[in-house]
Image (cartoon, one colour):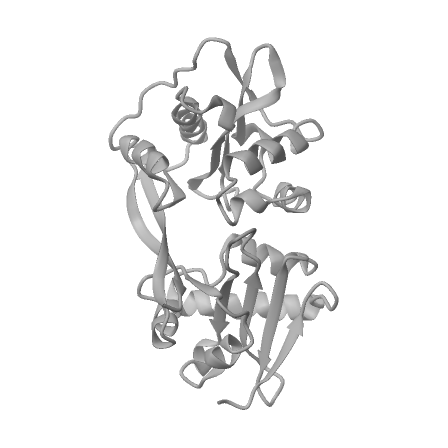
Length: 303
């Protein structure tokens, strides 16, 4: 076991600004070394906000008080195991820092890896973990490739953009219902939504809502698109959801196409998305719209 000191930060003892900065710098060093993100968006946002009550942070310090590694665990929602991401300084890998952090994570924790050939995958396998969940990272060109059809809305539905100050609580209601069985997306609350709305990439014009003409304040389906960085050339199908009472009407496909139209009209080059392997309906829709796998992210658990 390496000579490291592990310190815990949580809702009772939140991260300091200096600790948050050090973690983000460590994650950037790992990204530069591996070519893929060390922390996914939700984990990174929890570091930035410093007071996310659902996150527990573990900081591993070497003798000279240098940050050698970091781990964050998050509750998985009702009936779901906790999930975690582990980052070790590229210059200190193979020395037991990751294993030391793992001993302080909750029992039954699942580990995320965002690169099939990356350090996180190698670490998880070395610790006896096996893949239990797959997240497809898919993409397609917005300027070439198979054309997608025009969006077709059922009678009685119309399109409008998300309006800050009007739609937050209704969107949270629909999102929670649409993703009731999704351990991350379905658990988003008002602080999570507000944090995302405060990001430089947030654009309400790209947050597309389908509503009934006679109920304009009740969301039937939505497609939240994203361009990060805002000056970049790549868009993202950030979240697509359909209220359970309106499923089966083709709204998911229609609102997805509306979002693709919006991103193409922005003059972007391509678009990406993330979708769980067990979401057969969404995978079928995206494959039919010309998307293909770019990478597969995996979650690991002990057998």
